[in-house]
Length: 131
Length: 81
Length: 276
Image 1: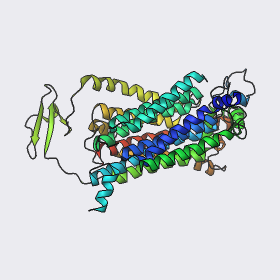
Image 2: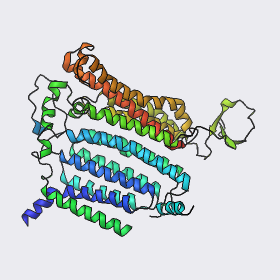
Image 3: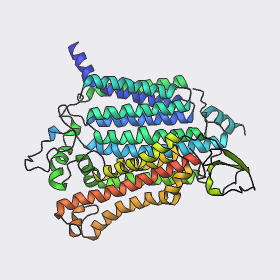
């Protein structure tokens, strides 16, 4: 029992990220509206980014900006005192790229709307099959 | 990291995510997605990823909501699911 | 489709939850991700680059190639949006609307007719009429310079505090977008035209790649900013700090240009006459 509780306390963050990923994936697969699909894609992206950031967390550490770096009292830096900056760097660029791809996705959705006058997937497919 | 705050914001994030894909109005979905992004930004601040939180606050809650609103403005708010 | 989707999603979720059993506990300082290369970045960043913010130094110096191509991806997304939406031919509208500046009255002018009064007293309106809101216009007008100043501060101060080219660029772009949302697209285009926003993004990429090429010309590796010590004061360590700054300026310009460019294409459907 105690071991099970420790498992929950140690892992509940990961499980909530997986819930978010499932929400995003469900929206991408099952939703009928194109803009809803794009929202789902963004939720999926942010859930993955959240997972990557959480791998860099260290208990008892501070943000990755070195303290007293320009003072005379500057001492040797201990890596365990600072959160891992590497996932932050990779995900920071991923967020900005995600907004750029969001722009392209919305442009395609607008084009589709002006061609078929609807954003619903089944209505678009019906119009393609019966011209 | 304060785990009570962490758990509270994680719950809010999940509710905002579910709301953004369940609501039957695309403008509402865009606004709820902005709220989701902002909660995400708070979560990253709690985890100590300040640069990422800053980026998400300006990109996710700011610019991408405007993009969604611009797209919905030129298409339609109607959605079946 | 809905039940099938739900089954797939639950299966994927179950597999992922099963995989978390092998993960290190949340916040473990000895997790594998924090052991190999990142301690070196944290310990050496001040010593080697004189930049206290480890994220900035890793972003622009240790992993400069990565960021350069991310900037290129952003630029190509802007180009893709432009190619998808921009239309070159303009259809003149059947009628145009004007507001008299002093009285606030609105007029509809049919095609081919002209207003006989002096045109500077009138301002053109969008075809989908939006109410004229004095408070929003004036508040945004006074807020935007400060937002832009803050954006420049974020780019320049990214070495010491959270921030950098990506964040500052997005803030600068958002200030122009705010101008367009609070006034109209025409006002935003007067401040920053289509050509300006379309030139900002490749120019930013050019600054980034040009900094790397300059290092190459000076006899070092591509994006090895120590080479800039021959041109800038302060020795090789400060040269790396200055090189990071140059690169951040390039990133900021590229991101700002692309954000504004994508917004203008989306908001006006590529017609650049009126919009959100």
